[in-house]
Length: 134
Image 1 (cartoon, rainbow, N blue to C red):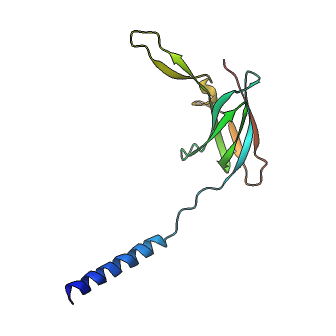
Image 2 (tube, rainbow, N blue to C red):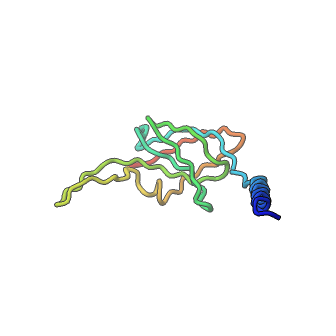
Image 3 (tube, helix red, strand yellow):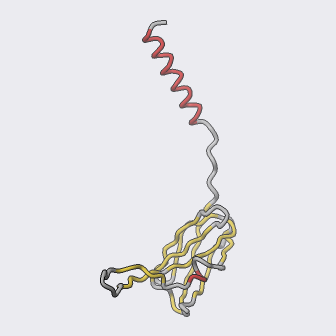
């Protein structure tokens, strides 16, 4: 076998391997469906914020933007932990100065949230979340 024949055979073998790898089963993604709803803080629509629909076991989450108290987007089907966040910029008054983002929503509605939503394939997936600033 000549060097060019060996090269051609190696190239052909490489292409076959690439094709076989490409034909393998891909992991199916969990089904996502449209969800929507409202978020109020102290009885008033949350001006701006974020709602996270989280799967605690895997750490997966879907991010939905809140604008004028309303949100809409895709979220995975299943029982999801819900976290609500709304940040404001706070100026640090010290020698260094600067600004930091501070969550206006208490931890019991985000990092320590007990809020939950059951997202179903059949819907309707409309949710209402009421949070308190204190």
